[in-house]
Length: 475
Ligand code: SAH
Image (cartoon, rainbow, N blue to C red):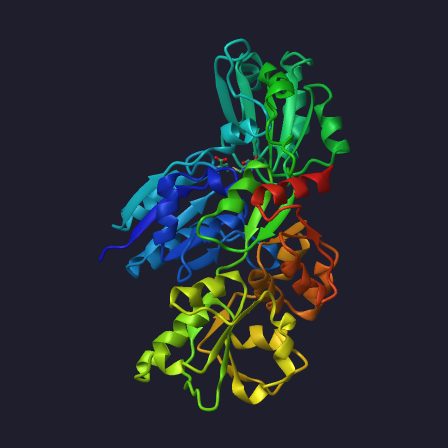
């Protein structure tokens, strides 16, 4: 099969600003090459098997040369892989997309481009600046501020006379030259100017001034690259259109567990937060023998363990009718439902294993069914219990930097809380104590209390109530 390379415009950073087609191609990709300006959260769209290759930096902070990047991409595609080259904004706006595309085609590979939202337009929108406006600007011009490396120097005279909105990309190191030259060529010193750093990201920051004052303003505010420099009367519209920076959770990073429905994810994004979904738990099945000899009580930890138990029983040529003298105990609401679905009324239901009074008695005749580490963590003091553990969960380690940059953690259930904590090192747990953790119920709170970590509990067990609590915390 002929290799294929898709050049994708990733947009300015916010993960939902990707096109539908770009998301599909990322999901299908075998390898993704990305660079410095790419928001790493976008890589969560990729499948687990996908190879992620950072070409933004070499060790010691050197950039990988363009020709080397092209060689790497082409070599990967020639292996017959579906390769994505992820570029910030739009690939054809100062993104070298044209050069890469030509080389790909010369190498007889299948090539396509998926346009992206350029920071020059979308980034400004998130700062409340419309790039055109009937009353203020009827054209716009996107200009590279990377003056030294360009063959053609900018024609300052023409630029100074241009009526439309001017947007400079890669211009921060040349801000002084740009403003001085424009003023020297008679562009009004009063022209409104804004600088937008890390647009659409939690680090977004906008400062405004005039052509005359902006250098000083930018220096005071320590504005750095990557930033957009925008000049023109449209900048004044920010007073009305600044929707993003005024959102209640703007600038906050919230960590939540992975879910297919993305309910809470969407609530948080809409409130302006930046959201990190924990990686999906992967289930691994364990080949273990099930022996019910001498057992008269089964304690089910979750609904999965109920399903596994029944299929194992059948595999052994038995069914529940043979368990006439066995009591069923369930931990939690969902487990209870799963047992009831089998037509069995559980003898008792507990909300936490540690609430289960008989933990230290009847050890010989009780079988606990569920994930090993989950059970062990719940009953620390009692090592001699019998466990049947047909599956285990694995998750990717949580990185220290991810913990450091988070402001809030939201764990919606005791199970999510257990697996989250189970995956953390002791140092990470210490770090976690300095963060704010939101939970919906007293049972989840207990899981954290057991590790001496304090939490904030929402008034009600609903996403809206959690959101209200988060916003209150910010006020
Ligand atoms: N292809 C990209 C531009 C690449 S050039 C696009 O269409 O947006 C890199 C420059 O783009 C940076 O130096 C900065 O000026 C600008 N830029 C890209 N993303 C940005 C962001 N999120 N916030 C502010 N500026 C950004």
